[in-house]
Amino acid sequence: MDILTLELFDVTVSEALREVSRVLEDHPGLPLRIVIGGDEMLLHNVQRFLERSGRTATPYREGSGWRVETASADAPAPALARAVEPVTRIIPAPLQAPPRPLLLTRASLGAGNGGV
Image 1 (cartoon, rainbow, N blue to C red):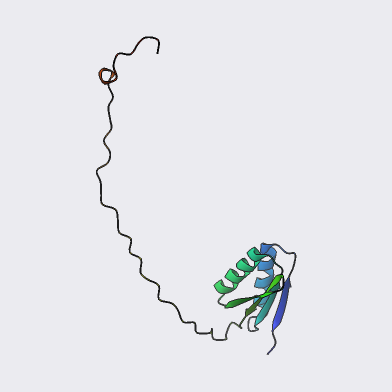
Image 2 (cartoon, rainbow, N blue to C red):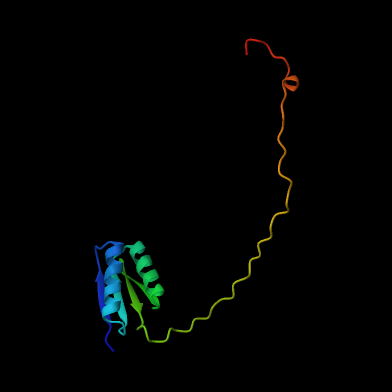
């Protein structure tokens, strides 16, 4: 089976995502290999885009860059054992009465002197 290779060097994130989208539309059944420079933000965004498109993206470190392997869209995704996450319960704080305003009168402050 053929693997389509896409090289993304010196491109912005939006340019890369447009190119990946175009390749996925033109070749929907082929597995895809994407070679990315050392830009980890670009890697993260391409990986998220592929996962939102229904493709599993597996990144591999290659020297100073990255290689992302994706299976074809109709290929079954590998079964991953999902870890059971503990259920976190949020316990609300006990209700407290709102604070009451404090009224300071002239009599409680004292007379003071005129120079202040």
